[in-house]
Length: 222
Image 1 (cartoon, rainbow, N blue to C red):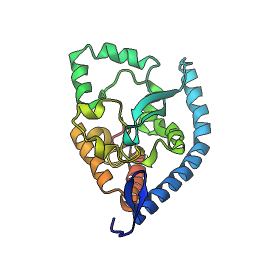
Image 2 (image 1 turned 180 degrees about the horizontal axis):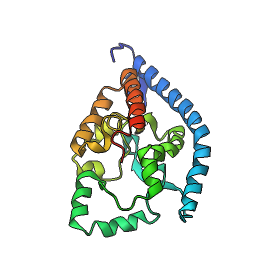
Image 3 (image 1 turned 30 degrees about the horizontal axis):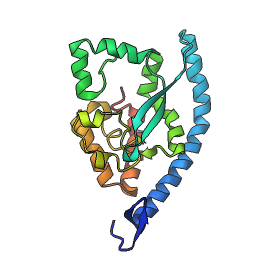
Image 4 (image 1 turned 180 degrees about the vertical axis):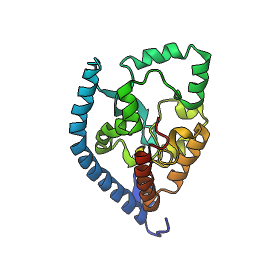
């Protein structure tokens, strides 16, 4: 940013243009969250009915501990796409060297046997992310930003905390709309760093456009 006048914000210098951008970004996040809630309510009913039909009466929501801006611990909300006891099942799966190697490299499994049929549809359509509008409204997340990671994930891949955690994590972002699951972890981090270093109106608008295309064509969704 090229503004000469600097103001103090959260104990560090920030230019007037940056202040305007981040204020506008927050207002946009709140507006999108409110709109998101309008669609979230009927979606909750539909997803719940679908799970009940399959004989699954457990909660349709999934809450997970993640790392937010400045290393703050946050809890993100998603529609549950896996079996209810997914964590216990994962522990058993990781006893298999094949699954453990894949998990250590990407923090996910290509053909994850824990994913339910309904969960697969939610993932393919990216509808599983909808409850995160709650996180956006709370201020833990933004509509656009790096994906929030689990504890230790960034260290496991020699990631840069200073860069990655300098902004609010997002529901979608530069990695999410540029290949997502089709990209290896090192390349993923490069894309997330690129977004943070070039954050502004231009790249956010591109993220929105690319995300819409990715959702329509189901690019990289698994």
